Image (cartoon, rainbow, N blue to C red; front, side):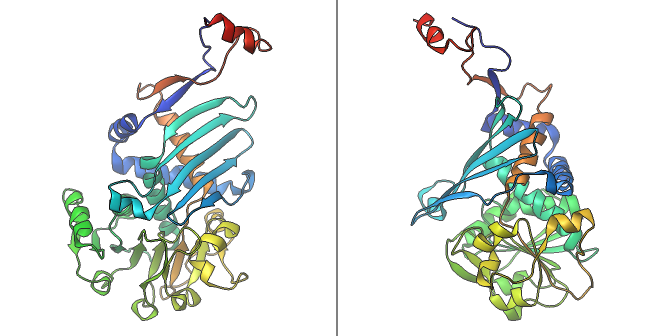
Length: 347
């Protein structure tokens, strides 16, 4: 039987090893590092292949593929979104991802991405807010206290210096869970009884609810001047969180307009409503926040380049740690033309 070559053995980061890697690096340091990695790739945005994610919708959720390439490395993520899963004791979002060498087509890394997606989503939110939020913002509200909420809070603490987090969820148990998980974080955590109470005094408001429906989590009259909105819960057709009036008086920043116009908050607006691509702000070719009174909105739906950045970060961070397994994923016959012979010799 053939012994696989090093090219045929693909590093695999399991859930267990991803958790070990996060603690090996340190959670807040990893969020800061991820934000920097994502920002670096946004600065070279034109180098990437870009396409809206390929989505398969059903009545209960969506399954998506998110591919991209920078010409040297190809990456994709498989991810689902099933809001009803939580009621069944299952994760709303699960994911895995792969990197491959463009020159050979051989895979370079296979990784869990349920945890990694939560980390990269939070890092992207904080990275965007670094360019868009009011200077010196220290108070943040999180509306929707599910699986993403703690990651958001810690990313904003680590990247922006947020000191107080105000929490609200329609399910008090979710808020209690989030508050308990953040108890030792160094953040001042305030559990609130209403969304109105949660946004009092907040300069940054994150909405990350899960229901697949047109919803009004925040009404127009709730949002005052100078606020930065980080809207990440609306991420598929028919799923929104903000009243249209908020959008109409906000400066809106997006990842990739052809995808966001289908999936984001701006699906509620005319197809030609003006938006600014975040990579342009980061590269200095467009303005971000222009005044203290401006309302800025990051309509974040998640884009493949962010996953690509996260996978490349993991591939570099895991080296020398042993926190991965090797999978025999690629057939490796002695003669590349004799795949059948390799099969027969395995009897």
